[in-house]
Amino acid sequence: MPCPTFFWAMHKTTEDLHYLVETAREAGQAILDVYDTDFDVQKKGDESPLTEADLRSHRVIAQRLRERYPDVPVLSEESTEQVAYDVRRAWTRFWLVDPLDGTKEFVKRNGQFTVNIALVEEGRPTVGVIHAPVLDHLYHGVVGEGAWKMEGDRKMALPVPRDEKCQGVVIAGSLSHPSPEMDAFIEEQRREHGHVEFKAMGSSLKICLVAEGVADVYPRFGPTMEWDTGAGHAIVSAAGRKVIRHGSDEELVYNKPDLHNPWFVVR
Image (cartoon, rainbow, N blue to C red; front, side, top):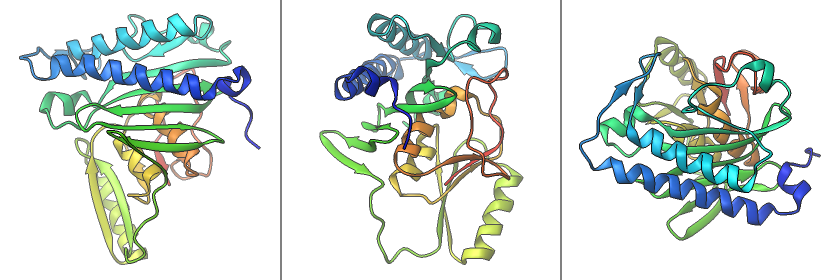
């Protein structure tokens, strides 16, 4: 039986999950306020793009989480300074946030970017919310309780049953990060299953496709950070799937000294 999460311990699961959903929506609106403007694109130290939308979303989420949960630290991609591991190592629970996951997709204006909020406890994501503001899709889940997707006012439990007529395997993959390793993986799956369908998607929506049951597997052969995967990891776990290290059966762990993820597979 899964360990109780912070929400269960506080006996406020529904109330707190609603607060997180509203926080993600508010952050999404802050992003949309920039989306249709002539925004500037800066470069961070790792050459990844940064926009005013990233910063506005970060401010909304950080403020709302600190107002309601002042004793739970927040680790966000857009924190002014990342917290040293000597401090983080003592955290038993914390918020892990990517205010705008898929900034490249935001810059392309293709709508495939998300707001990611996760609660991590003892190195495991236990609660996750992912909001795609342009698509008006919102995924959320609590490990041990379930996962859901909202499209507008419509809410459905995850995973959604697949059409029995579907044959072969559906692979989710990156819209902006193709790789030779992915090509080799697809060929391997084609030899094993015959028919293979590839669904290209941006940001953490690839993990959501597996949680939803639209895709069978999402392999990632490239660099990601803990905030890229935390919320999706919680949601896909709540839907009965796993996020494991490539080449092993070990699930990803969080709050490592180095916040980079290894290669992984969601299935």
